[in-house]
Length: 219
Image (cartoon, rainbow, N blue to C red):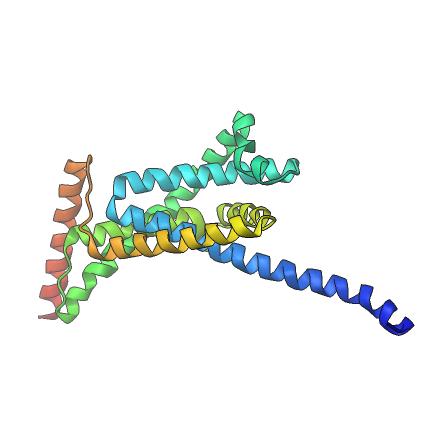
């Protein structure tokens, strides 16, 4: 190796590191969205329990983000750190509660948009529209525009997991399989609103009336 090559080699390492970091960041972002897709799909199938899962997940990720910004550490600290600081859990929950009005807007608007396809002669079951509204609300709490903290913490966790390539690859395969299953279930399965049966009947009635009004307005 010539002296020029010897001096050039170290100069290439930072660029290589940046490229590797960019790849890890890209995969971490993809994995984060796969987690969001899993939660959204689960929420569409089981809206009540799915929304509880979304609230709990968003709250814990927010708490983890607060903890990670104060305490450096590896994967274990990123996953379990918030459990050691109850105040972070309270703050994370508070941040999620603040986002609930934003999520509620989507929970109302999305079913109305779904029911609006009656204008072109397509009839959708009211409970299906309501379930997709619940799924939209779950998405808002985790990754909607302006909601960056939960997704950022997920990316931080997956970036730390990338230190173990085999585990990183296995995690990717599992997330892909789970997300495909969740999306397929959201499309194929009939949503179940247990245990909120009275609320289910009320929502179904309201959306059915809205669908009929749309159909009458175009007929």
